[in-house]
Image 1 (cartoon, rainbow, N blue to C red):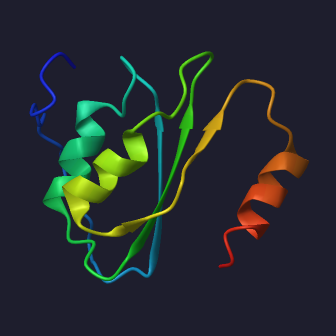
Image 2 (cartoon, rainbow, N blue to C red):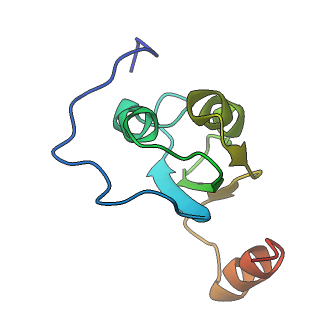
Length: 101
C-alpha cells in the first residue's frame, strides 16, 4: 500500500466487458482503495461504463478515491459512498435511488 503503483496479481479477469454500470466495493486501506482494486480496475475495460464506488471504513473518509478510480479507468465515476458500521437499509435505499439507475 506504500506504493500507489503496486498491482498485485488477480486470479481472473471479468468474463465479459461492456457493462453500463459497475459498482466497486472495497474497504479503505491507508486512506485509499486497496492495490488489488487498482489491479481490477486497470486490467479490465470500462470504456463507456459508469463506475459507482462504495467503501467501508470505521473512520477514514472516501477522500480522493473516486478521482483515482476515474484516472485509472478513464470511465465516468460517481461520487462514492463511505459506509461506517451503522448505515441502515433505508440509507442505502436513499443512496441507490439517488443514482438514477
